[in-house]
Structure formats: C-alpha cells, structure tokens
Image (cartoon, rainbow over all chains, first blue to last red; front, side, top):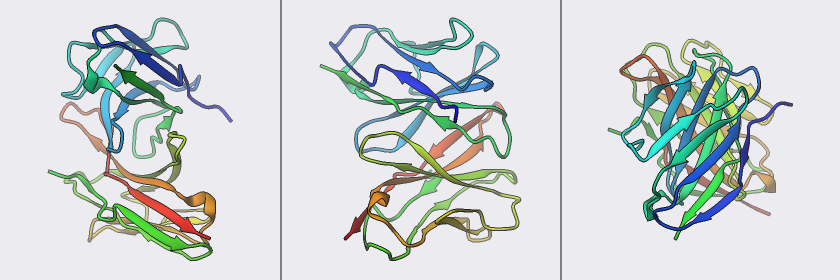
Length: 115
Length: 117
C-alpha cells in the first residue's frame, strides 16, 4: 500500500540553525500539507500546497517557514532560523483529491528538537 | 472558538469491552467531513474512519464505527471488543473550508485511551 514517507525521523538542531524536513507524498496525490504537534498538544495545520504554490497557511507559518516541491517527488519544509518553540513533531500529509472525501494520508512524522 | 471538542482527556477500559470516544464539532458549513486518527506512542498518525456530512449511514471500518448525530453535531468513535493494541491517543478532526476556499483539517485535543488487561 502506498504511503507518505518522511525523513529524518528525528532531528536535533541548535537554536538559530536552518533545518529542512523532507517528505515524499503518495505519487498520484496532488495536495500536500504540513502539520505540527507540540509535545502533548493537538495537531495544528501549518500550510497546504497545490500546483506548486501555497494555497493556504496558518498564522503559525510565518516568514521563518517555507515549503518547496523541488522535484516531482519531494515536498520540503524549511525553517530558516529555528527557535526553541519550534520543537515539535512535524507531519506531512497528502491527498489525491480535494472534496468531501479527501482523506489526508499522514507520514510518520519528524520529531524536531531545538536546543 | 473551539471547532472540535474532545471532553475526555483520558479513559481506562477493560480489554474486550466496547469503548466510546466523544467528539463534538462546530461548523456552519453544509458540506464537511469528520475523521478519527489513532496516534500510538511511536507518534505516527493512523487514519481510522471517515464520516461525510451527507452520509446517511454511520461509517464502519472493522471494529471501528462512528456514531454520527448531525443535529447534535457529534461524531463519537466506537471501538468494539477493545484490544491491548488499541491503547493510544485518539484524535477527532474536521475537514473545513478556509476563508479562501481551501481545505484543512482541524484537530481536537485528543483522548488517551488505555486498555487494561
């Protein structure tokens, strides 16, 4: 069964450093998403991406964040200058269609720890 | 305002018993979708079940069923014959349209379910 993959599974970085989280969505999916889950809290929407551009972003997704689909398979989230409060689990998701039944398939997540 | 409310932060259930996890939602959309995800201690998000706002029948997927009461805006997850492997965090989520016509999932705060042998 096709699945969303994410690398790395765990990333430790120092405050102020740039990190790139990588995702490979399911191959025939067209809509891509990043979500964040701070430890012990609920999952929060960050950004959605379609047709090579951001379609929606939350207030969390400030200028420190960017997303890119550099080739036909990868979908990346970049945090330019990490802060302690960026420590969280980051989930990539993708969906084939957009509509009432657009099940979003989640990747296993990348746990980011900023020290 | 809370869009998805899960009022049970934690539940303990005896193995083989049925369990109901509560979820209420708030939306003015006519077309929306409701999802349940399971998050084990390893952290991944596992899709369990989906209910569309226009679906007349309650959704079922194996041991999982969704008790959808549209007028009450509730979408409770029922797990029958619980197993030790069901111990996990469970999140209710709603697909909603944003102001720009895009879609996103909004999650509740989750319920931590522990199955007791």
